[in-house]
Image (tube, rainbow, N blue to C red; front, side, top):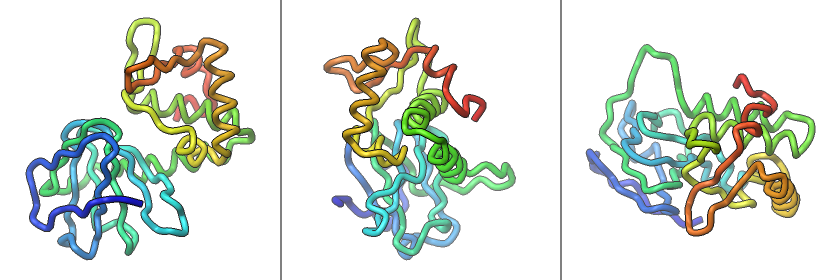
Amino acid sequence: MSFRFLPDAPAKAIRMPVGQTVLLDPALRPEGSCIEVLEGMARVYCPCEETEGMTLAFLQPGDQLRTDRLCSEGVCVEALTPLVFSSEAEPRSGDGFDPVNEWTLQLLRIRHLGSAEQRLHALLALLVRRMGRRCGDWCDLPFRLTHERIGELIGATRVTTTRMISKIRQAQLLQVPSGDTCLRLAPALVDSAPLAAA
């Protein structure tokens, strides 16, 4: 995996282009520190070789990632859209909500659904509900994930994932606009997903 290290000195705004990854090493961060997403969307994943980049969470503006709650090898943050985050944010206390724990729980719930089709359906709906927006007749997700990454998230091979996505596209429930970085999902697909109340 290719990543850069987070600068030692806290910074108000660190900018990352799409696809760039930064490693958050808890050994190099002061206890109780966190990063906060200011703009854009990111994927948080484990850098350990054994887990092969396992996705833990997705972050959007306002979400914080506590660096003292990471495994000893840290975590990586990948920019899914142009990303700006602060590494000098003050951790919020008292609200009890941790976006990383919440995402990990939701992804675990999806992995326990019976079929790959159900897992894909639930994942797409969760991503749109949490990170997308309604735009006319479609729901837009402002980034794309590779079929391999989607397969990792739902416990399926890339080939199986590609086949299932093609089926959804043929049913005109999913569009991948050429030259654009977003996905479009039909509201009916989102509303009918397993775990829709998640």
